[in-house]
Length: 292
Image (cartoon, rainbow, N blue to C red; front, side):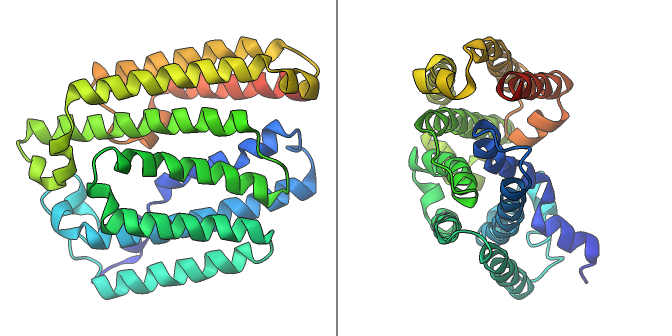
C-alpha cells in the first residue's frame, strides 16, 4: 500500500526547479521588486508546478513497463507498483484541475499556454517521445512555454532574444539528457528500454550539443548588447555576464562528457557546487546591472 512519501515522489517535486524559467520575464522586465507582478508570477509558478506534476504522472503511467527494467526508474511509485495506475490517473486529473483553478486568476493567455503545454506533453508521453529529433525539440518547447507563460502571467511582451536564448539552452539540455541516457543504457546493454535512443549516436548528440551551446552563447551575447537591451537597462554592462554563461556551458559539457552525467539536468544544476555558485553569481550580477 502506498504511503505519503510514495505520492510525494510521484509528483517529482525535484523537477519543479525547471519552472523557475517562468520568472525570467519578471526579472528582465524590471518588475522583480514590484509586488503585483511578483504575485502574478508566483501564481503562474504554482500552476505550472501542479500541471507539470500531472504530466509526470501520465508519463510514468505510459512508461511503466520500460521504467520497471531501468536501474533507477524502476523505483518510481508506478513502475514499482506502490501506486496503482487508477490512483495515478486520479491524482493527475486532480492536479490538472487545481492548476487550472489557480490559473483562473491569471490572464486567459496564460491558461491557453499551460493547456497547450499539457496537451503537447500528453502526446509526447504517448507517442512523440519515440520520434528521433522531434523528442528533443518537444523537451525544448516545454522550457520555452514556461518563459512565454511567465510573460503572459504579468502581461508583458516577451523578448524575442529571451525566447531565442531559452530555445538554444533547452536544446542543449535536452541533447545532453539524451546523451546521458544513451551512455547509461549502453553500459548495461539495455537500449531497448528506450527505443528512440537506438536512433541516436554519441557523435550525433555531441554535435547537437555543440551547435546548441554555440547558439546559446552567441544569442545571449548579442542580446546583452542589442539596442533595445541597452535602451531598457541604460547600460551595456550586461555583456560582462557572458563570462558566467560561457563558464556554465563549459562546466556542463565537462560533467556530461568526462563525468558521464547529463541524464538528470536538474541534479547538475542544483547539486554541482561550481555550477550552482556560477548560476548564483550570474543572477546576482544581472540584478545589480539591471536594477542598479
